Image (cartoon, rainbow, N blue to C red; front, side, top):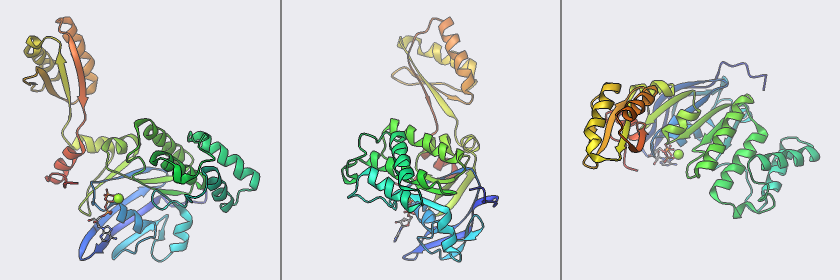
Length: 318
Ligand SMILES: Nc1ncnc2c1ncn2[C@@H]1O[C@H](COP(=O)(O)OP(=O)(O)OP(=O)(O)O)[C@@H](O)[C@H]1O
Ligand SMILES: [Mg+2]
């Protein structure tokens, strides 16, 4: 992979894709630096998959240009295909074969010797907690197992640029965390990653940069921190054990955090929390005043709120 010299893994300029007179991708531009993770964030129908399909040479753009490590996706298709890996709905997994057979065949196709292919397949199955299922047909796999196998296959090839289209949608939290770890490993090994997601927390966990798209247009391109700064702050929610103490608790949080607290009918105190480091001070003060807390919760801005802040428009109904 050391032959990759290009500063940018992806350079997209004014890219357009029209379906039935409707612009699914409407003149988007962004770049991804080599060796980073970029999160393409957007609601259903925003144009994420369409964008990835154009970058992966699976769809022809109607206008604009896209380059992968400097190679044009329409003019240098073969070169681009050698540099990318695409998992998800397009993975080359054969459902009628076992997980072990799939990985071994894939490794052989990539030029591994028979022994190396077997060893590598075993290692990957172990890493993705699929050892027990190694000799089961993939058609019997759950969605989560299938996704893990897809990612194992892309790890095998570890191409310079990897597209992951919603890699964790529908996965349980444990499998999701494992996926995130694998994605980080891929980057540590030198790959650049473009992943699409509908989850702000996922982009926040993984991405160096986030491109937010809505209705085929880029509405923001920023770091996760920058993006969060641009939307409403997190809020702190407290439930006190004795509801009579709620007004007092509200006063204390206001004094420490400097915002305006609201007390709900259920005696829940809510206040904007710009600086999470101040949370400890709130707890100390409440304890000093002998106010016991039943529940505490820090709420991050939701994707809805991000979209509201960025577009002035509620997220499209899904
Ligand atoms: N092959 C196609 N023919 C016609 N319209 C399409 C086609 N593919 C996508 N579209 C439309 O283009 C728009 C963008 O779709 P796309 O699949 O890129 O969105 P997405 O951001 O990936 O959404 P999701 O989160 O649901 O996967 C949608 O309005 C969709 O209906
Ligand atoms: Mg999609």
